Length: 463
Image (cartoon, rainbow, N blue to C red; front, top):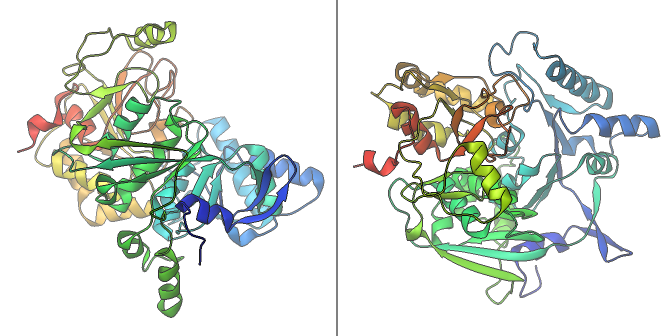
């Protein structure tokens, strides 16, 4: 079906080229378009001004996630800007006849959580959203990436984008992971090794035994943070785990049609003799539980290491903001907040992992611990499994779905000067609220910090 010696990216890209355009760019067809309340208003305003409608409504799906409160979602939104943005999304979807999973809908949730759990995210597709972490969907073997507001309008009106083809890069991670090391630790390790600009200009394919050993939810965590290394997106070739995960999902065909799809998905892999523009390899055994110490995701280190020395002014400014010093250990540093959620780590496996660790324990009285499921479906499943009772007994607060404290666009902000160990994807200055200090880590590391009231090495708690 495909030409020989092609990467997975090449196979999908070439099958979606509509035509060549001057300047070496190409018109690429988009299979699925997700929208939310933050980056869509201007796009709809532009379409109204031009007097045009949505070209293919059934390939666009909307949800409210960034600005929504995670408490009392049945009540009117209190924050004026958040309310305006969510109300505008509701009106735009009504006016343009787009399906919306708004507050109160049984399928509402973070856009990068609901796409896979509903089976809309499938191998071989092109998927876009006005959100940088759209790369999450690449875990299923597709080309998924974030777009700007003007491009949101392009896709709504044409179902296509004019793009320059990125370079291809493969990151191999081989070997067996240590106990207590999760998918989040892998991607934080890669961010630290490759830095925030290490993959700029590339679309990354993750490969190797440590990657294929991960569950689909773990693979989503890996692809989610590709953008933090500067990559255009990240992807992992589909395999039997992918097929098993998708089987029976609401948007996935059944019977003979599913078998045909499965056979196509099995052809989506990088040919053995295909070459990449860049390729790097890492040993899984070298990866330990990770934490960040600075103000970008590339400023990460093993929990057993000391904060490194840096020569740049930006490095010094970052440590000043965090009130940390080179040569210090983060182990034992006090924290006031724990946030377990975001499109990186808010799925049912993440919640199960945390529940298993905190069962029979009680969080520190000095810590405010929030657990925010990525969707109504995750929330319902957590309650059906009794995880909510475990969280409650341990002193954790299980909220309703939304992006929550990943970013300071809703009510779940971290106060100025206080520390939050977070399972989200970014630790920029003010990301979780003005003056908030963020330490990125895995759900396991965050759960342990909530219990102890300080940053700890999870390996000391695992027998």
